[in-house]
Amino acid sequence: MILVEPTRPKTQCEHHRDSVQTSTPEGQPLVGAYVPQCDENGQYSSRQCHGSTGHCWCVDSTGQERPGTRSSPGTPRVDCNKPDQPQRPKTHCEHHRDSVQTTSPEGYPILGAYVPQCDAEGQYLPQQCHGSTGHCWCVDTTGQERAGSRTEPGVPPKDCSKPGEPFASLSSFMVILI
Image (cartoon, rainbow, N blue to C red; front, side):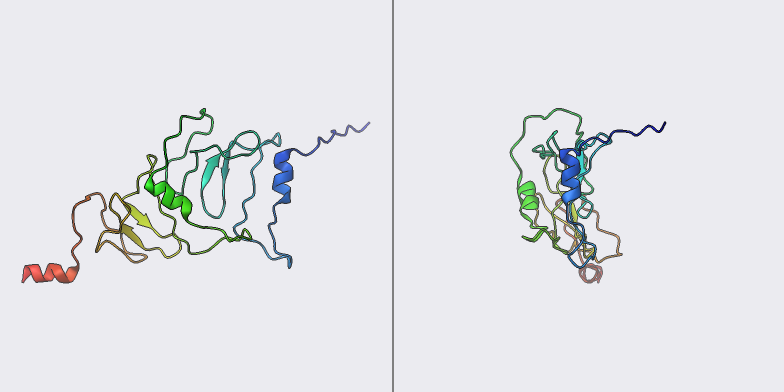
């Protein structure tokens, strides 16, 4: 006698996951598509992450994003098992970050878009880096680039921890020595 495991019907998460278009009509892979993650029971995993952008967020049992839980690459992750805390108003950095359009109206990723990085309290990280170009620079508390702080890809970034200190260029340093 052969025992056959009964198959359960697909869950909402599994239907959602299976409906995501991951290739073009010509069969080419579609980079940047968000594919929901389901747990072993077919339910939405409490933490969802977008493979192309690196953003992660917590969801409820229906797959809806829990407000205030989205984290950018390189920022501390929210514990998705903790209950929601009262939400504070969004900061300037968070509004700036959330206003950046990273996908086209058709859902395709927009490559090369700079997305500001905010810390856990919603303040600008002192060092900002552009993921596509590799350039890094220091910013003040309002997100404005600090003069002389930009570095090229492959060059060690400046120390952005001293907020009031200007960044002198090598030529201005030489003038001071002469």
